[in-house]
Structures are given as structure tokens and as C-alpha cells.
Amino acid sequence: MNDNKHNDNNKQGGKRLSRRTFLKALGLGAATAAAPAIVGCATGDDKKLPVQEPPVGKMTYRENPKTHEKVSILGYGMMRLPATNGQPFGRDNDAEIDQEMVNKQVDYAIEHGVNYFDTSPAYSRGLSERATGIALSRHKRDEYFIATKLSNFAPETQTRAASIEMFQNSLKELQVDYIDYLLLHSIGGGTGEEAMELFRQRYIYNGILDYLMEQREKGVIRNLGFSYHGEIAVFDYLLANHDKYKWDFVQIELNYLDWRHAKDFSEENTNAEYLYAELSKRNIPAVIMEPLLGGRLASLPTPLARKILERDPERSIASWAFRYAASFPGVLTVLSGMTYMEHLKENLCTYSPLEELNDEEKNFLYGIADEIVGYNTIPCNDCKYCMPCPYGIDIPGVLTHYNKCIAEGNLTRDRNDPDYARARRAFLIGYDRSVPRLRQADHCIGCGKCVEHCPQRIQIPREMERINNYVEALKQGIDRGLDA
Image (cartoon, rainbow, N blue to C red):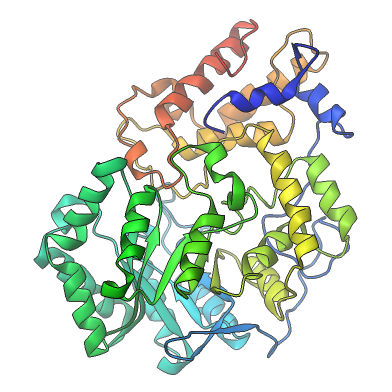
């Protein structure tokens, strides 16, 4: 949560409830359910059980209304690839991409019906397209659809020549003659007129959008769309000009929390209910990102996790979120970043075939979402777009630890809370273990470089200051909540 107004929900008789008391008021203690961050085949509970083998030939498909091709409802996100040391490849991992494992997982996905693979020149330190191209080139071209992006974020990549070079390099790295789904990457960055101006710099003044439309006419791009994060005016502008641009698809963030509560986390966010409705009016297919909100909808606080498990013990908590995202007729595919084989297998189980949610089940999840809002988490999806911080702060690490402590009941606001000592120790020790001292929130100088890159519009310097104040209060053993 980016503001403090929801803390008022945790008051009783004018006295602020401690986190432990708040969780007790919901009927269960301060612990959280050990829910996996992956979708499950029927396991009976969310304990660590052997992953079941998904069936072959049962994948659910949606039809592209333009090409009439069948697209798998599960899309493979190639942003968080496996590394040779067993960890996700990324900025904080010096190991190399495990190409053998990428090949193996892509082979398995295609064998089980997945045919949509999403990448970008910006993913995995600029190496995702190459790794994806190596894996997919081993298959027949008509067995898969490639989605990639024109990721011209840096000013030096926004000239006409540089943007064209980026697009041509994508063809080379992916080892293809055409791109099935090409996106203008993450439009809407910035605020107000600044966001519109940035969009024009990236795609209009340099003639690049016209160039991409020409490539579509030539068949080098088969479907042209954009992914949206941020300023709604840019989204509305592009849809208002749909007759001119003829968008073939649009990628949006959609999940049962963001459906009606995205603006509760930041006034600058847009509820998914509006985004989807605007696309539906124009019959534009939606590609869905963040169905689990970076895993947050797979690891819920115990009271909420148990509600879901009691509703259907045969399904994992995460599977509800994946089924929700796919249960709208205008959704073409739902992206999932599957670093490990078990992620892939579990997701295949959920979508082979998909059992869509009915209205009553959707309303059940909306009730869960209403309760999630009261937990005052920060909407960080661990996408790492804010990184690297020029001052070395592990921004996602700090925010993830904070959210984890909320879920586990390890935030305490009152020294008189009988659980104060345990929660204080858990927060501080966990903080030092998960984030190195030199990369913690106290090193933030408030430069704001990270804010312009955050898709969730988090005011990161403000949150760093707030969390650091809380940490210092814990160290000194004084009463100061996270409102300070």
C-alpha cells in the first residue's frame, strides 16, 4: 500500500490494533499459509507435494480474431530464465543462463500445447531473446508464436535508426523472418503530459510507429499491439485512435486484486476492470500479465489462504488467480514467468484444460481482494525495472521483505504487544539476511531515478524512508509505527 488511509481499518474503539490482534480478529493467528507461488494440479492442500505430470493434448486455446489461429491460454514468459547455479538469472546473479534447461522446458511446454512465448530485448540483461531463439529454433516455425517488444526506453535508443536496429536485432536473435506479436513496450511511463510526451518521443516523432505499421503490412509483423503501465491518458489516446492504428492486441495487468483495487494502492494506477472493458468495446484481444502480482496472490496471509483452501481443498491458492485471469472471453493468453520445470508443470495442470470461474466464484475472490487491501502491503511485483539503483539499494529486496513480514505477522507497532519481542527479532534478523547492510533502505538519498521506471507507480523513496524509520525504531526499541 502506498498510502496510510487503510490503516484506519485496523482501529477498534479508537485504539490501533497490533498486527497480531488484527489477525486474531480475523479468526486465525499471525502465521501465514505456506502456499507455493505456483499453480497446482489437484494436491489436496498446499504442502510441498510431488508435482503431478500434466496431461498431453488437453491445453485450452483461444482464437485470434484476426488470424483465426489458436493460441494457448498459457503463455510462456521468458523474463526470469533459469541460471546454471539453479537460481533465476538476473542482475543479482553472476551465473550464466542455463540454456540446456531453457531448451528442455521449452520442449516440454510445446509438447504439452504451449505455443505463445513472450520475450523482450530488455529481459535477462538483454539475453532473453537469444536464449529464446536458440530454444525455439529447434522446432518447426508453425509450432510457436513469438511475442517480443520494441523496448526503446533509453534516450539513445529512441532515434529512428536505433529503434529500427533494435527491431532488426530482435529478428536476428530470435532466428525468425517475422514476429508474430510485436508490442510497444510499457507505454504510459511518467505522469500527465510528461507520459504523452515520452510516448511521442519513443514512437511518433521518430516515425517508428509508422515504420512498425509498414512492417505489419509487409508481414514481418503479424500482430501489432502495446503493453500498458502507468498514465491512463496514453492508454485512452491509443484506443481512441484505434481506427488509425488498428491494434491487434493489448497487454494489460489483470488479476482479482487489480480488477477493482489497483487505485487503492496508488491513485495513479488504473483498475483492470476499466482496461478490460475498454478493450472489449473494441473487440481487441487482451494478453494478461501479472496474474499473480509477482507471486503475492499465491502467498496470502493465513486467514485468507484458509478461506480459499476451505472453499476447494483440491486446488492450490495460486490456481484460483490463474483461472480468474483466463476466465474472461476477451483474454487471448495469460503470461507466466516459469523459471523452473515445476512451475511449468503446475501451470499446465491448471490450463489443461481450463475450468473457468463462474460469477459466484469471481465474487468470492473479490471478497478476498477486499480483505487483502486491509493488509497495507506495497504493490511491488519484483519485476526489477527499478534496478539497478545508482546507490546500490536492493529495492525489490527491501519491499519484498516488508511485504513478507506483513503476511507473516512480523510487523509490530506497540511495545506492549506480547508478541513484540518475537516480531521485532524476526523483522530485523530477516532484514539483514535477505538484504545486505550496504543495500538497505537507509542508503536511499531520494534521487527518484527508480520511480519513473516502476510499472506500479510506487513512490519508492517515500517507502524507503518509511521502512527505514520503522527499522530504526525497532533497533532503538521505541514506539514508532510504519506511519511515521
